[in-house]
Structures are given as C-alpha cells and as structure tokens.
Length: 168
Image 1 (cartoon, rainbow, N blue to C red):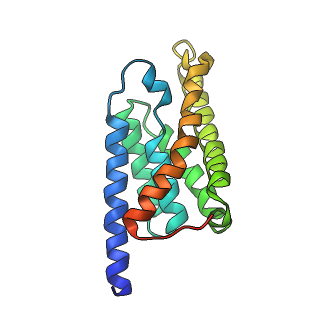
Image 2 (cartoon, helix red, strand yellow; image 1 turned 90 degrees about the vertical axis):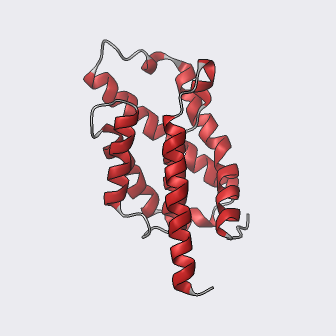
Image 3 (cartoon, rainbow, N blue to C red; image 1 turned 45 degrees about the vertical axis):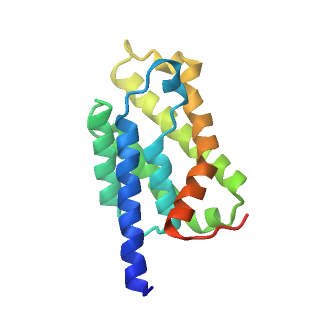
C-alpha cells in the first residue's frame, strides 16, 4: 500500500472512530452505569493525537468540544476549551507517551481524565453553583477509573483496526 493510500485509510479510520466516540457520548446510560461510562471522545482524541498528531488539527478539536457542549447541553465553549488545552498537552508529550508501556500510558490517560473532570466540574460550579451536586458526588469520579481501564482495550482495538503493532 502506498504512503498516500495508507494516510487516507488512517484518516478514514480516525474519522469513523471519532464519530463513533461522539455517538457513544450521546448514548443515554441509565442508572449507576453513568458513573462508569468513560470519556470516549477524550480517549479517542488522545489516541489519534498520540498516533498521528498532525491528522487532527486544533480547529477540529475545538469543533469536537463544541459538539460535546451541545450533546451535554453545557454552556458553549466549556468542553471545547478543556479538550483543546488537554489535546495541546498530549500533543506536546506525544513522542514520550509512545515510549511508555501501556500501563503507564493508562495512568497518564487517567491523569488527563482527572484534569478534564476537575476542570469541567470547576466551570460548572463557577457558572451554576446552586445546581452543581456532581462536584460532591464521589461516584462521579469513577469515570476516571473507567477511562484508565478502557485505555488498553481501546488502544488494542484501534491499533488492530489500523494495522499498527505496539510493543510494551
């Protein structure tokens, strides 16, 4: 397969997986399962940022964040700003990140998810202090753990889908 064909194939896979992550974000999860639902879009965007940093421009990340704001009916720009800042951070360290074993990568993803959750809750508390009960709900933070657990599986699936072999 030529380099251009491989790049186009990778772009198509990235687009499809990002679209699937957006659909998973829209899925209405009932009961206690909502607390264990990973931040799918954050995970997939982090994967593609590490795998091919130039494939997903920051403007595209901004649009994905705005889409999350619409999906979660937040004030426009909250998810966008947080996602943009975190993708910038992941992009800055993507070469080091690739060298980490999968478990260490999962810990880094857990840290990224923690920052995402705290920033999101901070914005929500700042804007709607009287309605922000999630800030004081410890179950809400289980998303961080589920993202940690989901990372190796997601990485394995996306690597096999795109034909890439990982070591570590």
